[in-house]
Length: 112
Image 1: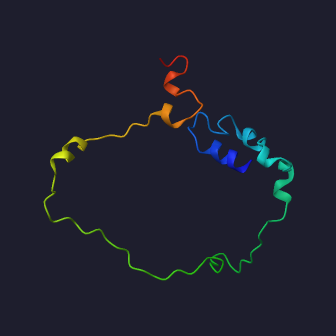
Image 2: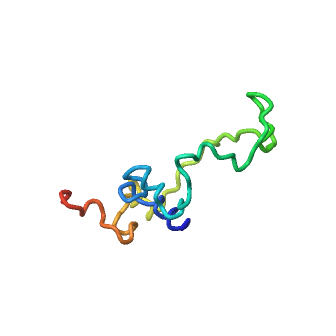
Image 3: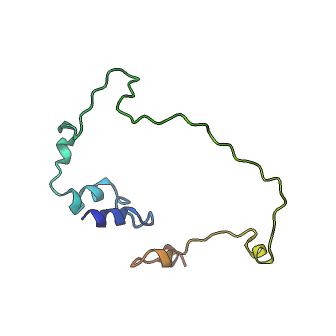
């Protein structure tokens, strides 16, 4: 159930679960048995103690590090003869190849 739900979230916006409203997500089998009407009344799964408005004790400590700045390239680009074909290249997603089992949006009625 979880894998199916994740796959339905990771798809084209037109076919994504929830694109027809939140009820579509809430009615998925993964959430079977969830009392949506009283969900805010349930206790938190993990309770934490907050000492003040700026308390960060519940976050991990990370060592301070310098922010690395990119080094400008001072050499001339070394274009090889095969590289010129990629100048001004733009990627175009082909929906028909990425959305198995669904009709690409450009093939749907009224879009031809």
